[in-house]
Amino acid sequence: MSSKKLIKMLKEVGASFDREGKGDHVIYKRNVKGKLMKAPILKGKSNLPPEYSLMVFKQLGITDTEINELLKCN
Image (cartoon, rainbow, N blue to C red):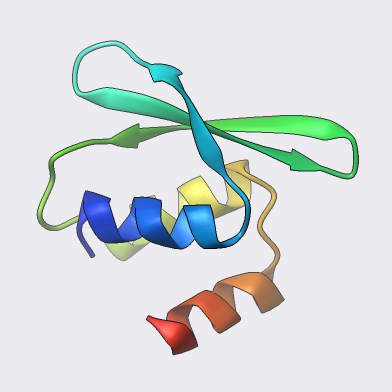
């Protein structure tokens, strides 16, 4: 999936832009049960490996159920 699609999916589960990271990364954040979770995301990539997307989902505290729902809708 592309960086743009990954970011769109993250926004659907409540993640939001935090800040620009180093180099070609942006940092997104998500509040999970009162805990702030953050993850760096490569920007401007047309094809990210599925493992990378899964790593970002997990860093932002997105559950397997939420991941499955995101993938069904997109």
